[in-house]
Image (cartoon, rainbow, N blue to C red; front, side, top):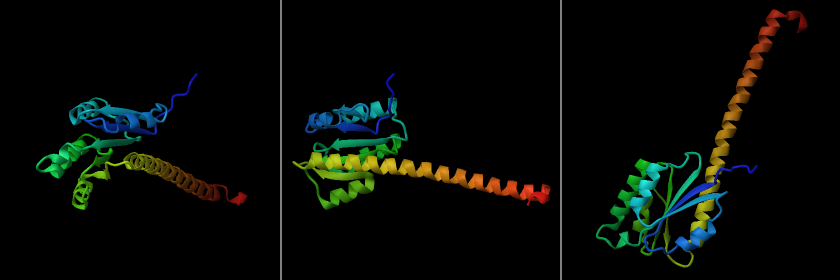
Length: 178
């Protein structure tokens, strides 16, 4: 009987022009560790995330290639609106934006809107995406383990407090044993 393991991350890719889809699908083609989903439009992504919400306790990442959006009149506001819309659907999803037109002002505005990172679309993009994905998974894993250790510590404190109360009660009920 094969043990069913939960994935380390749900990774979503929105890439209309399929710049990075093949490379990322090959890199994260391990269903035991990752659930990788590819979408060619934001609308399909939003439909999917509304229908099939991923579990809250698993890392969720969206890699969003926005080169098309940055050619419009007000690209930062359009992408920021998409990030706010995503925040209403799933607050815990981390967004990595890939663009060929990165400026410090664009990066600042998009990070304020909720993006984890803005990556320049060049030969190092896949390496940076991989580092961000693994770093986010590690951060989430550490956070989950920290929450579990806090619960264990509270249980320990409760046990010690109850033991202390038991010994005080035993002292007054059976003083001859102390």
